[in-house]
Image (cartoon, rainbow over all chains, first blue to last red):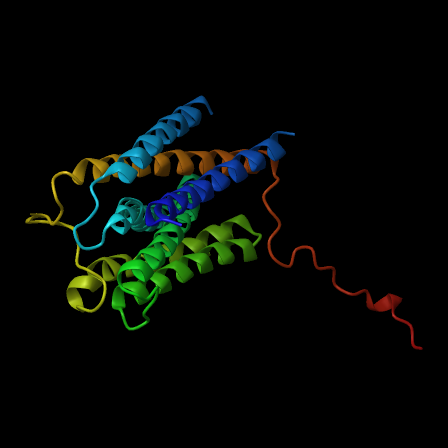
Amino acid sequence: MSDDFVVFLVYAACYGSILGYAVYLHRRLRKTED
Amino acid sequence: MTRVRIWFALAGLALLVGLWMALTAPADALQGVWFRLFYVHVSSMWFGMLAFLVTAFASIAWLVRKTPKWDRLASASVESGVLFTGIGLVVGMIWGKAVWGVAWDWEDPRLASTAVMFFVYLGYLALRGAVSDPQAKARRSAVLGAIAAVQVPLVYFSVNLFRTLHQTQTVRPDGMTMSPEMRPAFFVNLLAFTLLYVALVQARIFVARAEEARGTTELAAGDAVVPPRLDEVHDV
């Protein structure tokens, strides 16, 4: 695995965790509205 | 809610541009492509620390005014701060392993103080989860949120106070220790994290407000525990 690809994977993991938190907030809001 | 969606759309767009610029930025002469982790590491750590300072401000404002909006802002900012600091720590460990040869060193004051700060704010979230009375929850977390912020300048200036493994600041009052070709990627990532921080805090406040209106705030730790009914206990 090249260093470039590992750096890309690190960025993907960071953005994924941020997206995960945003989805969690969205689901919590939907649960409140139901 | 439309306003929050616009912030998220702007943040998403800026993050994608930031990602592209970070991955195509010039490689460092010594660190090679691993230096590209700088853009997400520094942006997330800066906004982690900024989030904790916002929490301190909102906590003091709640202690003075006692209005729920300050409590919502304080807790929303801590959640984003913990997320950003966690990202900064993990990215820093991967970067450290690649260029220092070690992922972690407890003798480095920057690393150790950041870890302590991270766990203190995890404790803040645990404290909020352990108290069910809204007034008590707001008061206790406001006291902790105001006091815990003393760590932020300590973490930031630890690299100047004690010189060990972690490098000193890249952005200093006398200029930047960074090649001009690398700066656009840094500034775009900073902008992306600014938009992201605003979007996440607004969304979290929106959720808190909706839950308060419906009276559906999360159960506190121990709320589900039913005390034993001694009158149902029979001698065997």
